Each structure stands twice: as structure tokens, then as C-alpha cells.
Length: 254
Image (cartoon, rainbow, N blue to C red; front, side, top):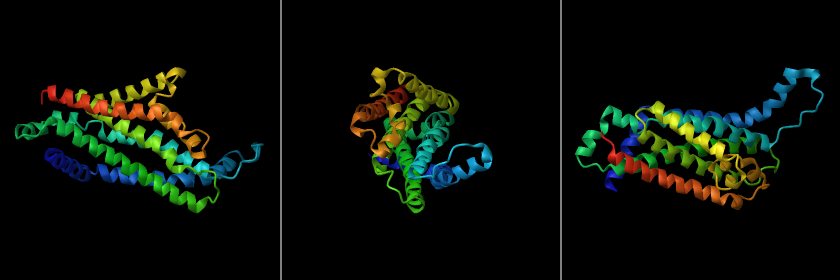
């Protein structure tokens, strides 16, 4: 536990000094502010672009539009930013040789993996909920409707999928020689989940469904309990990836 504490402390200090934490705060804060604003101005943009040539009436934006922007931005930008920033989290340590002195002085390699997992999960949790609460605050201010009654139930699957993603980053970074290989492997695994999702029999167990049904969860159109297999599978894979990372790093030449 002592190794994990001190290495985790080192990770957070490094994240601050390299401005990664600052970058995450700025990006996710901007995303949180943008979500309701984009929902508000989208009808005006469409009207200005098409003018009288558009024959349909554009409905007034609601809180659903704001939350739709949130989930779209989180899955298309937020998760990608996390992957880009941390794809070399372990391979970078190995290539630079920074772990050699620490390991020879008694640092357990498993502590490296566990500490980095804790660090990335906390970074993802903080960043996601920063954007979430900013979006929530602005949505309450701009939209007074009751179209989005289950905001916390809807965000839970996204958070769990994010945990799976960061543990995937840990595993691929442990396997790869550099951040580019790690990023490619991470992207490959995500693409594989999308391919598996084309088979109906695997859909309820596939973690990718956790970022595909958020708007239905938000409105209560889909029951969260029906996606419990996918959530449990995500948590199981996360633990499995951490264990595999420990095994691989223990056998890897530093």
C-alpha cells in the first residue's frame, strides 16, 4: 500500500507539472459550457444557413438537446482526449528507463500498474463529472422543462465505460513499445466492440451499448437494469485488464 500511495502521488504531481491535468480541466470545462449553448443556437444556425428554403418548422430546443450534445461530445471528444493524453502512460516510463531505479530500490511492479489505474480512473471521473455538472447547471438555467428526469442514471453507464477505456489504455500501454502503438491497440479494441455489437446475441453483454443508449436512459425509455450484464462485463474486463497488465509488466524487461 505504501508503494501505491507514493507512486500515485508521483503520478498526480507529474500530471500537474506536465499540464495534462490542466488540459483536461480546460477541455472538459469548455465541453460542459458548449453543450447547452450549442443546443440553443443550433436552430438559429440552421435558419441562417437555409433561410426560407427550409420548409419545415424547427422545434424549440429543450433540455434533451443539451444532454444530447453532452453525450455526443463525451463519446466523440472526451474519451478520445483521454486516450490521446495517456496512451503512453506505461510504455513511456519503460522507454525512458524511469522505472529502473525505482524497481531496483524496491518498488513493486504491480504497484506501478495499480497506481496508474487509480490515477487514470480518478482523472476520468473528475473530468467527466466536471463537464456533467457544468452542463447540468447551464441546462437548468436555460431550460425549465422536465424532459430529462434521469440525468444521474444516464451518466452512470458512460462513467463505467470510461473506466473500461482507461484500463484498456493501461493494458495496451503495457504491451506496446510507444504511445502510438498503444493508441492503435486501444482504437482496435474499441472497433472490435463495435463489430461485436452487430450481433444481436452479444448486444446486452457488449460494453459499447453503455454509450449508445444514454438518451433513452435519460428519458426513462430504457431500463438501466436491462444493461446490467454490459456494466458487469465492463467492470470484469477492467479488473482483467489490470491483472493482465501486472503480469505483462512483471515479465517485461525494463
